[in-house]
Length: 181
Picture 1 (cartoon, rainbow, N blue to C red):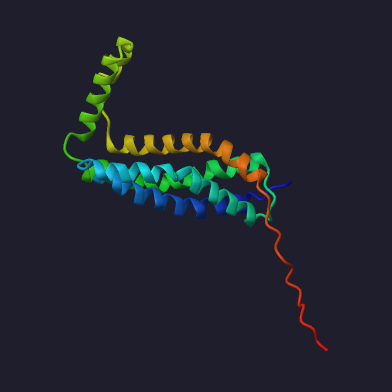
Picture 2 (picture 1 turned 120 degrees about the horizontal axis):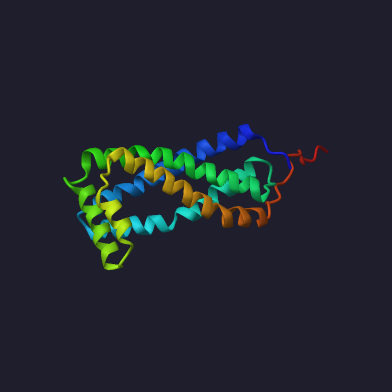
């Protein structure tokens, strides 16, 4: 099946925008979760639904292209879907780390990572490299993009397989069946 690249990108951008807006909504609970475990729980609950929403958008895309979707075509759509959603939520990531995060939030997070690595008896060279690092808000936003695209690469494998196997609903023809006696 030949795929139409313009439909692929247009649909991935359109669905990626709404997916990214869901991620922004979800990220608000992450930001609130800094001070409350209840909001962290809501964030984690919403995160659980991310692959299922990706499945829904991939199925919708299958319907947009006529009900036939190969595995690689579905996987490409899924990766692009996650990429465009990651671009949307990266703006909120940057704003959070730059303007809203408590003072020292990034430094404290880095120190917690170092402490965890030390307790796990990780390689001392790796710990020294991390100890010398500083993290900026833009680095966190870019890291978020890479992380979300990586998750998209992984999650899109089973999603593309599932959507490929889903049967396309048979839609009735739009013929005029009125009886003109």
